[in-house]
Image 1 (cartoon, helix red, strand yellow):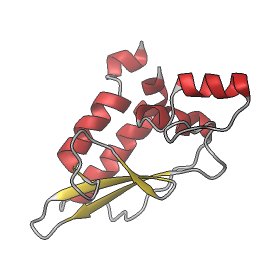
Image 2 (cartoon, rainbow, N blue to C red; image 1 turned 120 degrees about the vertical axis):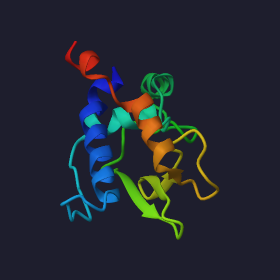
Image 3 (spheres, rainbow, N blue to C red; image 1 turned 135 degrees about the vertical axis):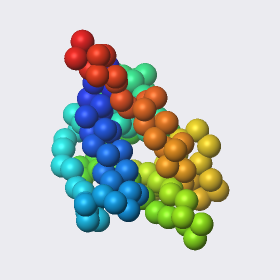
Length: 138
């Protein structure tokens, strides 16, 4: 269900990153900002394991603050996700994902700096955030 809310935004993010990596792309975009509410931020938080439903339900029943990292409910005002594309000296592309300014894991095997190769990031996005066109239309 969360992928239903993240598919189009995740596709947009991947497309903008691919455009930036392509030297023949006519796009000169350096920054793309998307605005939203908790309704589109929350599904990303679930898939990035920044929160989980069991923790949220427990907090609501007991009216207690989140006891551990990974249990933020709901996202705080002005919370944000940011994806940063960078290139190293060997022309390899990397993506860092930030939640409220803190690098988070956004692929199976990030490097020591928590950045992912673009290929690993793309695979992670496809697996965790994007439905196929048939699944989305269904």
